[in-house]
Each structure stands twice: as structure tokens, then as C-alpha cells.
Image 1: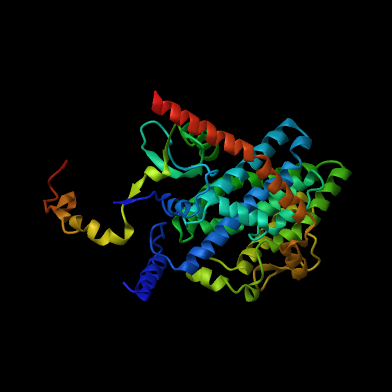
Image 2 (image 1 turned 90 degrees about the horizontal axis):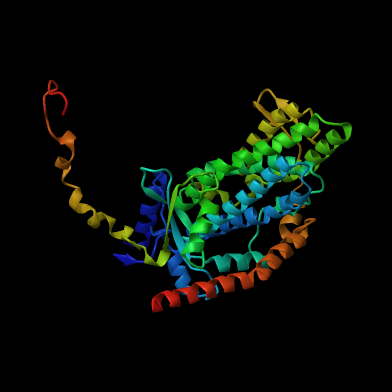
Length: 113
Length: 313
């Protein structure tokens, strides 16, 4: 695990390079487009605090009723996997095709399975 | 892995249309090109609010006023999507805004022209947003993930902009003699600057080849410009107006409209700061930023105070 958000990406690192105390923190925005669906990452924005982040997210990301619920997370609290290690990180799933239903050889006459 | 191998892995991904995401390895020049392009695009959205905001208080009806406000709000939103996409590449918002205000970063030269009449709101929607859409639709497939995703959002919203502009012109074109004159005058003034929005012609555009290889760009400046001219040459007939180009003519052999020479001297002049409104636009941005400083500081102080209080409770 690597600390730092990913806007998930480089902005966290950049903020550390040039700390400007007057700069509002960065927030990652997640929106549920309708009841029954997951919240989905839509982008990021700057805000002084969580309440302002939610209001800004409403104005920036839901001007056309794209959402019924908003989550905001300050970007520095998002941890992400490292893409350079993707090969080894996801390796355990590579040789386990038997986890998929299509792996099993069954007669066509078998119905409802 | 060596640098050469990293670069090969990167280019292989691009060639296979696998998107590059913020934490993936990328060549420095790719990062720099994107930062320049995305931030200048963001600046264009923000500065682009000014010429239109000029007419909000004088819109001819409540309906026109509401739609114009909505459009200008969208431009602000587009600027924000793009700034946050650029930030994923390691530049801060403050740095970008600093570059705009110091004149180091450019924005689209089109916004350095004045909006003299209400018909300009129509011409901007039809021509300027039309040219922007032509440029932006292929960017929805740009190789850099956050940029492409921002462009998808933007393109969805731009379509309303162009339609509201054309509607304004259509109403004027069916109005009084004075309204028709105003309509034609706006088209006359916005046509050539819009044609220039596609940038220098291909043989004078040295960075294009690399951007094509990286799939930031998918079509050349001249290809997109030709497509724009072809479409507008037909659309203008619906308005019963004319395009101010005596050389504009359908070419049966090429299947495209031929058009007259572009005044690149004017283009370079406006880009380098000598357009009619360069100074005014930049001053308005700097003033807004400086006048808003106390609000940003107060909001931060309020948030910090509240955080301390919550911790104590």
C-alpha cells in the first residue's frame, strides 16, 4: 500500500512539494447517481471543509441531476495500490480460471444452471 | 526496468488504447505537454466566462437570461473539471493560476475579442462552441484517463451551449431588418477568429506529430478545421445569412468546401497579447482572484476553528 491519493494521482505529491497554507485541501468526490447504485468516483475539487466540499460537489458535478447522494473524502486519506507492482499484486488470480462458471464442461441438455 | 523499457511499455499501452492513469509511468515530455494543454484548456473555460457574462444583465428576456447564466456556470464547471485533471499530473492549482495571471500560460485567443451586441451571444454559441466541440469530441478518447473523463463530461454539456446559440441567431434572423443586420454583423466578426481556433495549419504545427503518436490528439488541426467549415457552410443557410468569405465554395472533386486564406498575422498578434481585450480579460481575472483572497482565507480559518472545537468536544 502506498499513501497518497490518486485523483487519484499526483496532486497530493505536488501539494507536498509546494505547501501553500492558503490553499484549500483537495477532496475526492463520489456520487450515487440513483438509489440502488454504488457511489462512483467522479473527480475532485478544493474546499475548506467537508460541508463546503459537499456543496461545491453539488454545484460542480450534479448541475443536471446526476446524483442523489454525495460522498467527499479528503484526498490525503485515500490509499492506492501501486501500478508498478500490478503484475505481482494481481498474480494470485491469474491461474485460477476454475473460479469462473464457464470453466466447467457440462452437457448442453442440462438446463437452468 | 531501464528508461527505454519504460518508454516502450508506455507506448505499447497507448498503441493498444489502454488509458494512462495518474500513477502510471509516463515520459516527462508527455506529462509536460498534458499539463500545458489541460491547464490552458482550463484557463480558456474560465476566461471564456467573461465575454458572455458581459451580457447577463442585458439579456433580452428572462428565458435568455436564465440560459445564459446556466451556460456561464457550465464554463466554470468545465474549468474546474480540467484544473483537477491537470492536478493529477503534479501541478498545483495555485501554480496554474499563477501562470495564467503572470501571462506565462496562454488561453484560447478567441476570448480576446469583445462582445459588442446581443447577437454575439448567438454567434459565440454557434461558432465558438461549435469549433470547441469539434476539437473536444476527439479528446474524449485522449490517452490520459483523467483528461478523457473530464472531456466526456464537458462534451455532454457543450451540446446545449451550441443549440442555445443557434436558437438566438435563428430568432434574430427571422426578426426585423435591424435584428437581421445585427445577426449578420456578429457572424462576420466571429467567423474568422473561430476558424483560427483550430490552431496553426499542419505544416506550421511542430508539436502535433508527437501529440498524435501519444494519442492526445487524434486529428490534425486542418482536418478538424475543414470539418467545421463544411458543417457551418450548410448550417448558415438555415439562418439565411452568409459567411464572410468570398472564396467559400463547394468543391465537387474534394467533397469539401474550399475556403479563403487565414490571416495568421492576426492570430499571432492576438496570441502574443495584442488582441482587442487581452489586457482587460487578464485584469478582470487577477482582480477577481485578489478580491476573493479574504473569502478563501476566512473559509479556511473557519474550518480550522471548527475542527479545533470538534476535537475539544
